[in-house]
Image 1 (tube, rainbow, N blue to C red):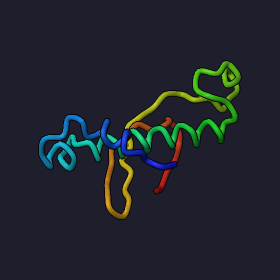
Image 2 (image 1 turned 45 degrees about the vertical axis):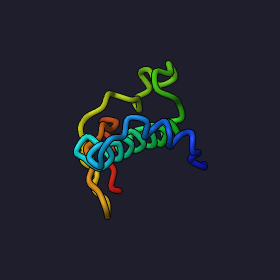
Image 3 (image 1 turned 90 degrees about the vertical axis):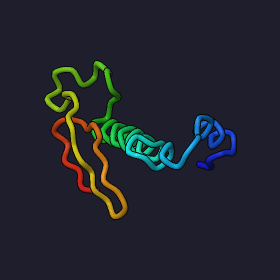
Image 4 (image 1 turned 60 degrees about the vertical axis):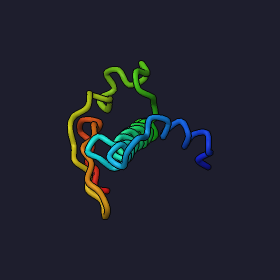
Length: 91
C-alpha cells in the first residue's frame, strides 16, 4: 500500500514542533500502537476464522475473551498495546 501525500498531509495537519511527531504521545507512537493493534486483531480473525462480535464464536470454546495490556519489544521500539486475551506474541 502506498502512503499518499494526502494521507501525510492529514497526519501532519496539526504539526508544530518535533515533539508532536517524536514525543511521548507523538504521532509516531500513536501510529505504531494503532497499526499493531489493528494487525493483531486481523491476525486473530484469521486464526479463529470469524470476526469480532461475530456470533459464530459464541460458546465455541475458542472465542475472543477481551483484551489486556502487553508490551511488545522490537529492534527499534517498545510499545504498550492492547492484545487479545490469551494470545502469546513475540515480535
